[in-house]
Image 1 (cartoon, helix red, strand yellow):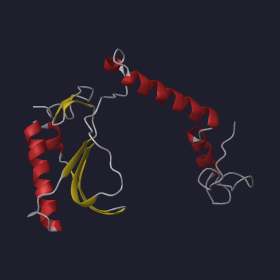
Image 2 (cartoon, one colour):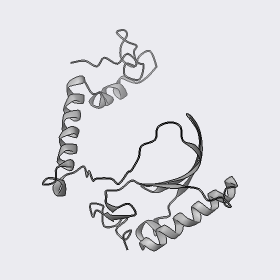
Image 3 (cartoon, one colour):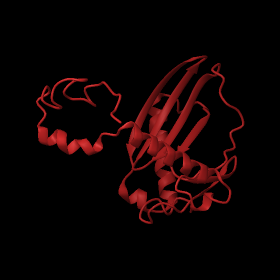
Image 4 (cartoon, helix red, strand yellow):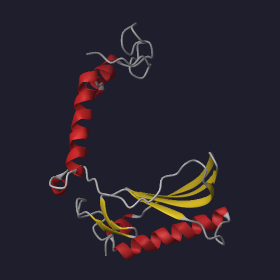
Length: 187
């Protein structure tokens, strides 16, 4: 089944017309080489089904330990309703980057400032204490830069690794990560 996409990205020759790639001066060799990257509706459905199956395995008590997609219960107590106001700090740790954000909410309106910090390889492979010291230094730098270092602000922390939360303030890092990366975080 052909893709229903009509954009120039999906159809360099234009939707329904022209030779693929010719209109944009893209080499036919490049177009041919990229064809295996074009997904039709059947492939997308297969990927969706596989993803859903993996999520179900992750949610299942008996299948979670061997699941590729780890799904753990959270301890979220309330969901936002859109009337929240105030300033909040957010931390986002994932891969080799760490992002600090200042989020300002005004009842349906929002504004965000952020800064990305690159985590040095020595920190990524070192003891967990070094990683969290680095996070604290970045947070301090950001708070001073944004002029909020003298304010007591709520803070949220996104940790983009499989973490089994066992309480509101406690979690256990799953050992699914390569030994060379992040294996010391739970120390």
